[in-house]
Image 1 (cartoon, rainbow, N blue to C red):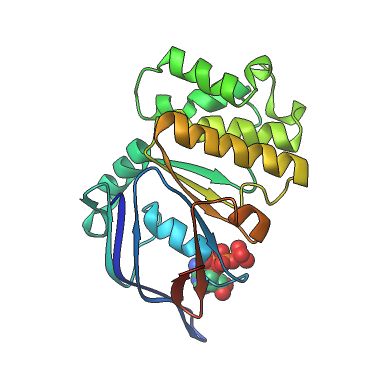
Image 2: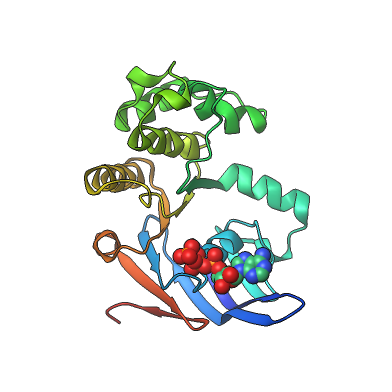
Amino acid sequence: MLIEINKLTMKYSTLRSHKMILNAIDLNIEANSFVAITGRSGSGKTTLLNLIGGLLKPVSGEICVNGEKITSYHEARLAEYRRKNIGYVFQTYNLMPELTVYENILLPIHLDKQKEDQKYIDQIMKTLNIEQLKDAYIDELSGGEQQRAALARAMANKPILILADEPTGNLDEENSLIVLNLLKTCQRLYNQTILLVTHDMNIAKQCDRIFIIENGSMSEAGS
Ligand SMILES: Nc1ncnc2c1ncn2[C@@H]1O[C@H](COP(=O)(O)OP(=O)(O)OP(=O)(O)O)[C@@H](O)[C@H]1O
């Protein structure tokens, strides 16, 4: 299993209330799978992604990713885990406007003080059809182009796991399909596992498995 989650519990406490978001959920995800996470707005999809990505600490429970028990890691080790294993893609792209497409893609590699694998980077830019945009600045790109650049950046470090939070949320149907198919191609070419948060059942249906978060519990569609 690439991801093993046991009795994961997450609540948010504010002065006024306590909100149970995930109530002792279990989840196992095999390597090389393409998994959709769906659920109503506010059900906890982003929270789950951030827990798996090591951006949040749960109240209790365990998360193991690729044999690493990340829930017992301290902050510095979590940061290293994220840099080496996780590629994040957000709905809002989060690219740096003052850098070119190519500079944005190389950013995570340089932050990790690694040297880029030029051949691999060229290959992903080609797969994502952005080679011709290499030297363009982010504000010169369309939404779909920005999302493809964000995907390339997420993949630059050769992560084993891509966490994609509504990556097609700001795109029209045509560009959503392009991004989805590119994610599938990359998953196949680079043996990645993809967790995709989406509201859109048409997108979710194209994944290998669909999980639904509802009232703190997790269920699998069709099981
Ligand atoms: N830092 C926080 N403090 C308090 N409550 C929070 C915090 N972050 C999220 N929440 C609450 O937890 C719930 C789950 O949030 P989350 O963002 O995981 O939902 P989501 O399913 O991704 O929603 P959406 O589809 O609208 O993006 C929401 O009700 C949200 O208001």
